[in-house]
Image (cartoon, rainbow, N blue to C red; front, side, top):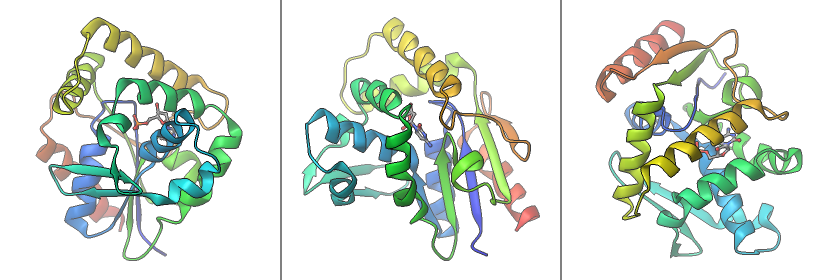
Length: 213
Ligand code: DC
């Protein structure tokens, strides 16, 4: 069986950073499922037909510090990480049809030698067989700070109180929606990294992986 680490959590919990570094460290495949919903939202906003097929033209290049998202050689990184696409992806991800369209695309990331998958329903729906299920979280203030830095790094102007409202609304919608909401599965281990460094969080999760695989 191919080993899987499933990391779920709210926006700004650090799951992107942690999952990416883990995947690079282990030499495993990396699934940023939120990115796939963001790409769907981007293509839909730009009135692109046949999104299920077009989404396959999107490439995600990354190392530990940088990422580049390309659609047919157009750099769409800043758009994809914008506040507008954050909200739109959260809205469209409520639709069962959209989730079904993206299910197979996400499943295809499961390949040897292993997979680190992060999102909202990795443990509950996509990879319930995963022996390592992490529910990663942090305080609202800390998550807000991280989102703020992320947007500023993409050169975007940010209104802090608006961002706080958006983050809260997105959390509520992602956790309360009918279809595959963000939940903590019975097998998940909660990791609150409000006061932990990235390295400390990584070490903690690596210890869990070593115990289970
Ligand atoms: O992780 P993120 O902020 O990039 O995700 C963007 C949106 O995509 C999020 O608000 C809800 C949706 N999403 C989802 O419904 N299921 C997932 N597994 C991942 C993301």
